[in-house]
Length: 245
Image 1 (cartoon, one colour):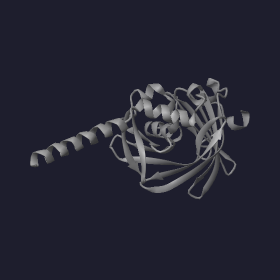
Image 2 (image 1 turned 90 degrees about the horizontal axis):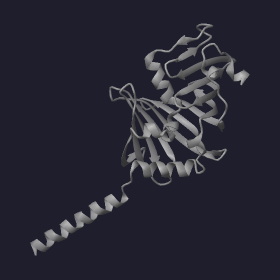
Image 3 (image 1 turned 180 degrees about the vertical axis):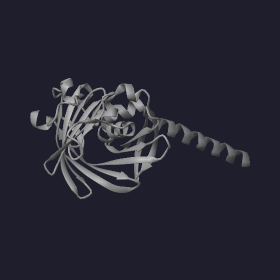
Image 4 (image 1 turned 30 degrees about the horizontal axis):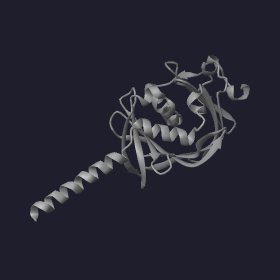
């Protein structure tokens, strides 16, 4: 009888293991499901650039921003606050910013500003970058903010990581977590509300948290793919681009 009981337990454990393996998914499968859900026609995956316009709230400051992104790693944010235009550009090794309240000339960004800034605002685009995904690892399902998610871990050049959380239930993106080389969370970006823009389903609202505290909120008002973005767009000498484009 004890022997029979032992056999039953072993059979049950084996069933659990097989069941778990059957439910496990590869990174390729998770990405395929995510892309099918959010980019069913493959428009974002095949695009070379995109432009996103947002309304933003950072503390007590309201702003409007335009994000110009061109693959593989060119991005420019133009922020207008109180009629003042601020520019932040991440273009490979040519990273610069313009703060007219400090100087009328653009200045080179510090190293720590460069990676964090790019990761901060173009975090979902990495899920459409096959080269970056080839370096990534899938964990889970895991629980993030009480929701069952797939966790994708992508290494960063500075030794940090980007963790992207995809809902298991509907394959919608839930959040992006940025972790520095020290292993501590730097920033968390939580996605809320989703809307179709030109056939692409994107999060319309994003909340930004640092050390668990809400520091900002953005709302997407327009999103366009394959906009013509010449190299000069990302050059430091080109000012007031938002008005010229």
